[in-house]
Length: 101
Image (cartoon, rainbow, N blue to C red; front, side):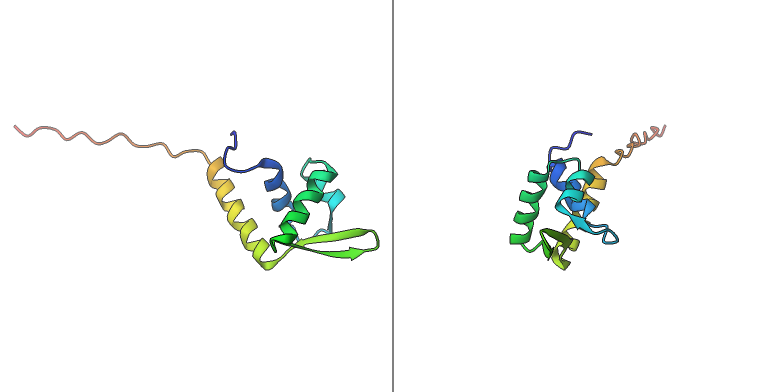
């Protein structure tokens, strides 16, 4: 389904960060979300300014993770994304009442 409400690359990065069992770096985020390193870096920096992500430096690289606020936002986005991609429910035709004689 074509996604007209959310930007796909940003969503993929945000949803990837939900997996806290993995150490996320800019390069691993870019690879997991099929984006460029520069795009992932710009998004992570913007998210950090908004308090959605936080980073921890390890030498020249930064480990990225969601803040509590970011985790809540990611969960809401995942729910909305799932709803948008769900199959629409088939509506039942209205029941026709028979005329009484």
